[in-house]
Image 1 (tube, rainbow, N blue to C red):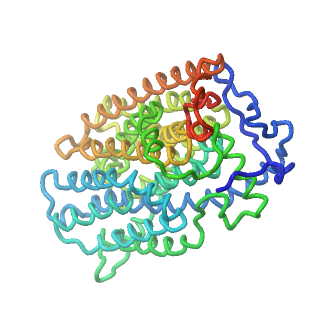
Image 2 (image 1 turned 90 degrees about the vertical axis):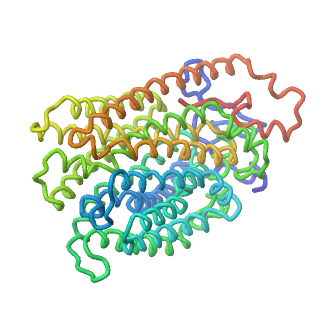
Image 3 (image 1 turned 60 degrees about the vertical axis):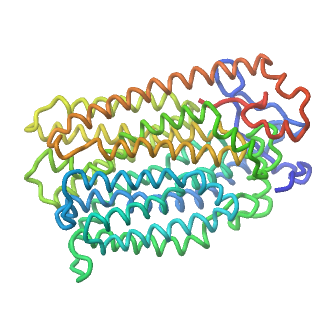
Length: 507
């Protein structure tokens, strides 16, 4: 995208986002860069109208499409309690192996997928991913043994792996760093809705009597068909970046480009040319690495519960029928959805990601501790503990992602960071596949204890990253990084990303 002449934008040029420039991390108005207009020249009303338009178009679209992804990934948990293990003659740990292989393949495609996205565009790549995993999910209705299960889980992992990092990259092209927190949470919270509707859909699909899709097979068949149809429609709807967004007017495109471009010190374009050294910077960013570990710890707990919540609820009261178990899953995810939105709103409103991660994780610690400590006959207490645990582990994930993306730098660095974040997070999901084993039923002590350890570790990590960001911001405020630009060409300065002296970390 060519450099934008600010004179052509006039009063519509804006940038209401404030950068962290005081020594304690509080938000101050951003200094003019390179002679561009100061905040006093900005039309804030125009920006508010633009953001509302982005929210009304992008967020419902990404929310729905990611919900399909999570449905197709975790519906195997609903299928399990509906008889999948018995019908496929699975023994020992074969079910857990099927879960693990999905996440291994999922992790392999994160970064390569984002490189393809930068080449062909999100408007092509994201719908293609959705149609592909929809086809695989539909075909899962036809499997008959462990070998078939492994084949579809491998293919599903390869198909789905690139979706979340793709969404993160596209969102970072339209939203400022402060805005990104809540928007990431909104689309990621669709996982809660998927968990809620997954139980409701499973309940409905189990009532059907198709000759080729009986019982749990109907869950895969119908959910796969829904994904295929939605993916085909998405080819006409998914945007790539502001400059080519069909739903924006020409002046809105310029506005959207400029406000995001000025978020990243020294950046002249929204999507810069692909360079190996920029990719390397994306890999070596300490904040990205820390947030990736944090997201992995969050994913360990989240994916463990997402895959086994029906099993855990069934173990709380073995008298529950399959349909009763599916129904009791629904309110658990409804509460988690509300908690996730509230804490993510607070993280965005006060620009304090680490505080919110630390606070909401206490819900999970309490929930898992109750599951560990209470007797099996305390069914109401244990069911209540599931509410706390799910709410506490679903919320930190999107905050960790926005924490990493907001401090990644240029578009290519963000593309790599998104892949690193989600890919590393998938390692936690692999461990999660083995956290609730049949031999540990019905209390699942090892799984619940492991989740407590992961949650506490993520709290400690959030504190460390917050302290590092505050220290680095103070140093830059005092001019301690000004020497970085000495002796560099303008092109080299433009490519500094997070190393630019004007860049401030968000924590």
